[in-house]
Length: 237
Image (cartoon, rainbow, N blue to C red; front, side):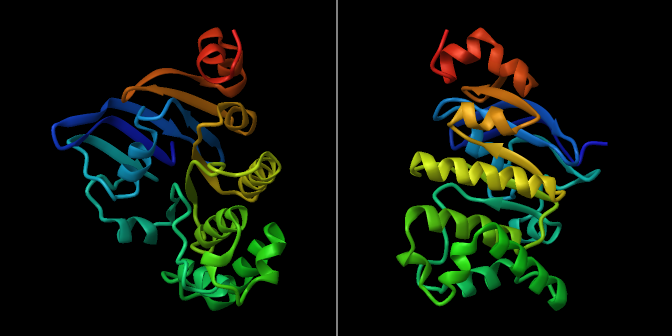
C-alpha cells in the first residue's frame, strides 16, 4: 500500500485553477520527485498535502487514511512534515530554539535527544552555532536548519520544497547527499526541485508537472533519458 496517494486533485487560487486533477503515489521508503517549470503546480501540491491549502476536489490518502480536510497541525502530528520553500526558519530564535520548535509535538524526551544528535551528525555546523540567531546564519546554514528542524518532528514522510534554491553549487551537492542519507535512515521523501538533474539523480521515481497536470511519469533513470525531459529541464536534446 502506498504511504501517500493523491487522487484526482484540483486546487484553485480564487478563479485561477492551479492543479487540474493530478494523481500520483509515493511508496514507503522511496524518494519521489516532482519536476517542472515555475508555475507548474509543484509547490501548490505540497502545500495542499500539508493542509495549508484546501482542494476543490480530490483525495489525499496518508497511510491509508484520508487527510484531505485536516488542518496543518493535525497533519504534522501524523509525522507528515514539510520543509518549506525559502527556509522560513524562526529568524530571531537561536539554532537550538529552532530545533526545539521542530519537536514541539513530541513528548518522548529521550528520543528527542536522539533526534538532536542525529541532526548534528548530518549538519555539524549547526552544533557549532547553537546559540546563534537563525537569521544571522548564511543561506546554506539556514537551509540546513530548516531541514534539521523538520527532522526534529521525526517524520515518516518529508515534503521538501526547493531545498537547493539560492545555494552555491557545492552546497547543493551537500544538501542532496543529506537527502539521500535521510532516506537511507528510513524517511520517505517527496521532493519538489527545479534542479531536475540533481532531483532525478537521487530520486527513485519522478513525475513531470506542466501547468497543473502530470505529463510524464516513470523511473528517474527513464525520465533522465527522455528527450522531452532532457530538452525542457536538463539542458540538452
